Image (tube, rainbow, N blue to C red; front, side, top):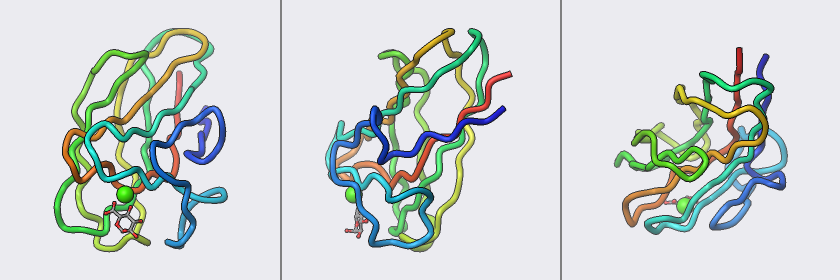
Length: 129
Ligand code: GCU
Ligand code: CA
């Protein structure tokens, strides 16, 4: 089953501001990360059993330039997803990532690797088997 973790809901962390000025987000807002290397969005997700999980990252990128990031699970970099332009800050899309989680709580962090920072991040939805 899938569980949605909103970027604005504690214990999620947003190095930036929780904004609501671009429509179409889920919940009460989204993470507008500071446009800087390492200004991250972090989620704490629960898995009942260890194993492969599917992550859906919902984001908007209103500029044409792709914004690359490092994906860290429990502090280890595991992938380098890139967030393409979506055409407008109010156009939200999901990106699917597959990771391995531990049983119990896991931190999932998106760390931008360029000075442009992350796209705006709405939520992380996690499906575990
Ligand atoms: C604009 C936009 C923000 C976005 C930012 C960015 O300022 O309003 O929502 O986060 O661009 O470039 O990251
Ligand atoms: Ca931003």
